[in-house]
Image (cartoon, rainbow, N blue to C red; front, side, top):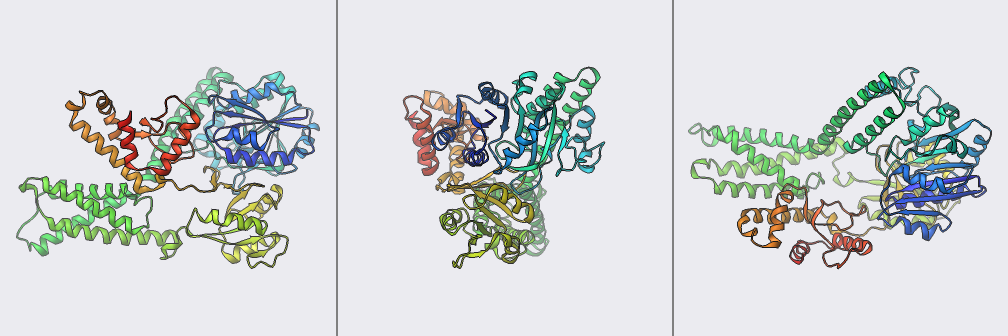
Length: 638
């Protein structure tokens, strides 16, 4: 056996399917075998592989054993001359392995080899070639000098930016996304270190290969697409923790004395620094608009108070300081919270939601106002006219925001997608309705094919693609692998550049996948099922139900403590109230349904015994048909 390809999968079924299709296209003339090690996915990955790719050797783990353990399971069973570790969110061109194996056979000292990788937008991924993360290299990376001087031989060692990405080179570290290794080298230096759960294992193995007298190479004569979709979230605090913990393991294993101490100091400093950046950045992304609008509302109400004193009360009465320190702040908070829970911040330019959110906030303010003692009721007029002022101010502000972002006052254009398909007319007709279901402003312009057509939707041939994109203002290109090879797809992506978003339709498939950047999750579009839990209004109802029941149980705590069922409600009411839990959650932790907090109760309340398949079906039915009544029924049935 010449080559064994090992793919570790975890809940990325559709990416895995496309990956396997590209792999089998590339090994047609090679004596090769394919292994898929599944780490307990719940998205039907194993069933898909067994159905569509019966020749694949499948290892289906009953738990997520991590990247190193899973790869080693397959490596131990293979006797191939070369082992390739390949991520499931990759696509390889048709001639990839032919070129790569010819290169490896001509380098008897080659222990490992990586390739030129690009993301879903055709942008080169610098981790295709890396240097050894010594304390010095780690320092330059952590303080950002490697980005400021990427081509410097001193500061750019982490990604070896001074080496031409279009030339073959000897390097230190390979990427686990695509890692070809000579089996003889692995037999000498050992397999992946299972101490590493995720991240760092590729650095460790690459280093051991070179320590064993072998060489690692970067091979530039073939390219692969790496979507980086299944686990890469650079601004995730969990990513920071897991990645840098792996670096500490590497330091403790391979460095000693002052080098180890210095490296660990840099790593621990980086953990806190990057975690802080992640928290701050994510907080700004999530809350900048509510915070800014809260400031606008406060300033508007403060101005209204002064105007009211001067022109309505005509100086006869001045509001007490509590108007500024208590009333205006809770007016502001009520409107912002109401906008948040009504979904106005998820749909910025839905002015119906904006008005509804403000009116709901006004109702809450009025209720609070009515409960206050007479001495603290200052002005209904401020509330009434404040409502009108806030609505007007936010309408103007969000209109300006829309114009700044989209350079138009046509609000129908905010999600306007102009797309073309590179493929045959039959494929274009097959996917057009599916794609439209994801975006009501989706505009499929036509198709591009080298086979000329009389269809009015035929726009031209692939060598005219760049010009077609410019003329029609296209911002999305979909490549059909039924008609165009992966190698030709990548050439066109390189030629066009990053001005548009790219997607692909695997051969004989009815779904589309892609990615908008190297740090973004992979995107999947398929036959869409309408789920009630995707509806913001119903999600708001679910949250309000959680809050209402939790508050009721807390208020009636002495009574709730008497009965066994309500005692459980009382125990969990605090967690539900603050949003750490929901009263009813999923039974099987599905990856492909709208996210929910862990449930005090779960959707499988009618099952007599645990059954994963039934639990997955019940989760889907719950998400699809959700209503508050379903939550109430579940709570009363346990």
